[in-house]
Image (cartoon, rainbow, N blue to C red; front, side, top):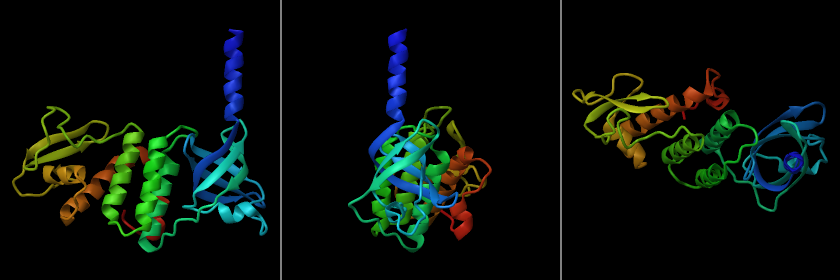
Length: 253
């Protein structure tokens, strides 16, 4: 028993000091007179909230580095939910996002800040996030980039959407049918399409679900359906509080 207790204490001590961890700033806000409270998305520890002491001073080195979309190496210490940032460094320029791509990046950041639990490792999602930022900086079409990230986020959190089968019969989803989406369960076949379109907010054409599965959005109706589905799926876990990135910029992601 004594060795078990000492081992647990060693793990707690190890977790109280995290050094040179690859990270991105998801969100930052003023804290007290000269500091910042930052949400960091790290490779091995997921979301970490930390205080950057003195980071709002004009001559603070961390002030210039603690920017959104800037690849960083951070060190933090402390045993509580909110850590203290002890060092930050980078030898890579920040990704430059502009216009709707900047708004898309802010949307992705807010999803992570809202949905991730503190200090839970999400290495696969970290890589997906990095790839998303690179794609947003380039010329890739936005719809597949955002939908792919949203799908990855839901899957990583244990809420993956099954776009392959009917959740009741386990039969393959077919283009000619209409399906009702039930969060945490999946899609339930509602009827064979007659009018060629879904009528309810939770109803989707099989053809649109297949398009999302294959990330093919040449059809505007398929793109709109994918956006509606992912918004519906995410809202089940975001709760009633609206996303600031949507309301502030009046952009429908």
